[in-house]
Structures are given as structure tokens and as C-alpha cells.
Image (cartoon, rainbow, N blue to C red; front, side, top):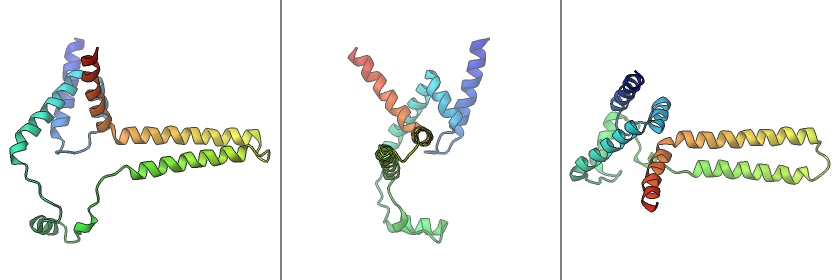
Length: 162
């Protein structure tokens, strides 16, 4: 009976995955299921590999500045500006992390001065601890697909080495 329920859940999640648009972010519930269910994770990975292999002969690199692409985008959105396209980067995460570390270090230096009470120091360090935990959680959850792929790549390597 347990296998039947698990199969129903897996079918529900696979249907949910198949209904997503290409490159659409996975819902949190589906991401957790894929982390926990090796069968579904394998199916999703195999579907992604199959799609990539099938699409290889059709791939033609088109620069963002291509005139036909710009015309098409302008027909969809008259306010489209090709200069507004910027590559995805982790710079915001790095800047926020550096700011957190600098704030932590500056308070640590101020804490050496006896002006600040012990109770205030505990409260500020607690806030710093919670903000760092929140920063890490947001970073991981916003990049969950990336981390799942990295874990999957590490596992076969570890099996190969042992």
C-alpha cells in the first residue's frame, strides 16, 4: 500500500514538472520531492539530457543584437530595449555577503570598547546570526536547481573513486 501511495505522489509531481514551461523555476514542493526521490530525480535528469540531445542539431547561436530578434521582441513589447539585457550574475549575493561580514567585523571591533553592554552585544550578535542564516537559506533556496545538479554530479564521481 505504501508503494501505491508513493507512486501516486511521484506521478503527481512528474505531471507538475511536465506542465512547467521550459527553463521555468521549479516550485518549492517539487524541488523538495526531487531532492528526496531518486526515481523522479533520475527521470527529470534523463528527460533533460534527452531534450538537450534532440535540440543540439537545431541550435543556432543568435546574438541579442540580431535585428530579427530585436524586431520580434519589439512586436511583443514596444518598450523593449536590447541594451537592458544583462547577464545573470552573483554579484548582488557577493556584495550582500561582504556587507554582512563587514558589519559583523565592525561591531566586533566596537565590542572591544567597554561602551557597549553585554546584553546589547548578545542581542546584536543574535541578529547577525539570524541574518547570516537567512542569507544562506535564501541563497540556497533561490539557487536550488544549481545545487541539486552539483550534488548529482558529485555523487557519480564519489562512486567512481571508491
